[in-house]
Image 1 (cartoon, rainbow, N blue to C red):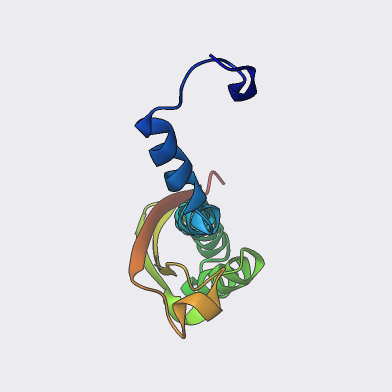
Image 2 (cartoon, rainbow, N blue to C red):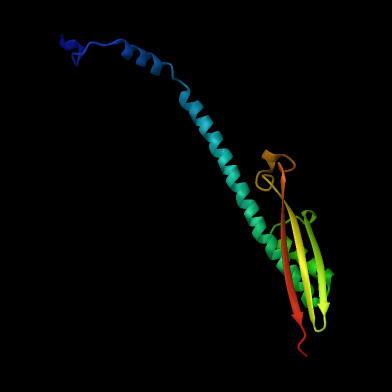
Length: 154
């Protein structure tokens, strides 16, 4: 044993192979970063899309409720439709994607109005128009139904 080798253990062939393997890994970290970034971006886009659809689902209920309430209180389906468009604007919906239908029912001193609202929610194109191009990859149709009544007790 000589003191010049340090530990006194002779080098074996696996040490040379290990040094050769680690010596050829220039740029591997950059490739790993690119792959990990791609996975994280896809995950981020998926979470943002899910958030957008859930937000639209909650807001279409608000639009439908406001439209039904206005239609039954005023007695006019047109007023209910205008209120639906106003509420849709407040919640960030595009009017060309919104469909509102009213089904009135009255008898005696009561009046019921059922409002059915549907909205075609775009995927990806709301938050990332440059990535998705002009339109989303697909559309999700969200539907809500609300019934309001009015009773005249006089």
